[in-house]
Length: 344
Image 1 (spheres, rainbow, N blue to C red):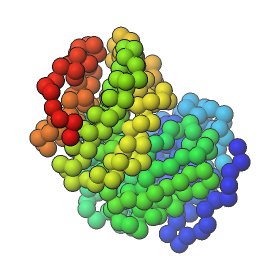
Image 2: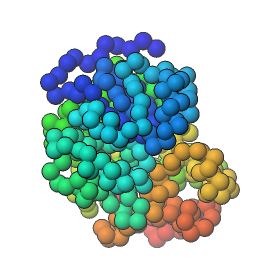
Image 3: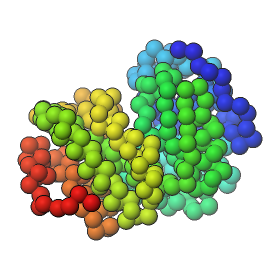
Image 4: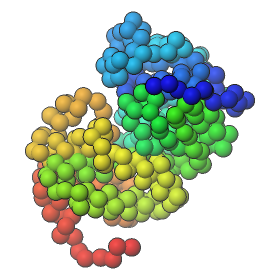
């Protein structure tokens, strides 16, 4: 595929960026940034993987056949990553987020920016990732995130995609958007970090529910009901926590929800499909071979719902299927037998 010219130079556009996490999503974003002309340094916790990617000049584990541009380099050195650029992009599973911040804390300077493309909540505490960041780095650090209906393989191939960049300041949101915007990639800015985080975390749990329904053979009607009522759950929680409705109705909310609930590129949907067909949770996750954020987030959503004193029944039954041995068929029955209520 031919790519259009990179975005025009902007004084608030990075020239270099450090990307932590060489899984499929981290590598795809690194490719997009490099194609936009940024000098990209890609890190992974596994030095053997990095050595292989340096030699092969592609991510042969997750995105084979897509070569790295010359301006995309790899390293296993955290020190080199921090020194490489002002802008640090974290794309690792949520369960490693706090640990990485602890490692970065003594190395970062006051003017460096932290943003992430990780979707999920901290296991155990139910804390949003911006809350974890403030706890570890203080409330003076500039931070943000990117999220939206994007699959790694399609981004890596340069297919048309769009997402949202939200940040603690409008300047940083624009800076992040400027870094990613280019070619077939469209980026919108937002000041609603909370809303973007909630949409990205909860949709993964709902995608498991949609997968379970399809795995049981319940058809299109049931799938759309799960998506629609799942959206209502996200909206309820977002409203109770102070996020904006329009964020949930945008790319990082309903857009990402539809994508992950309906396409088998979604790991979360694939987990649900496997569960609906009778596979054990541990077996299904092992077969997928990458982090399935919705499985971990499902254990945290209930914490947020309880704090907000709201009901999130679909998320609740997903948690019960994964962690409490509730059978998928009984989970669906529990949802259908709930007390009659008004839709709104």
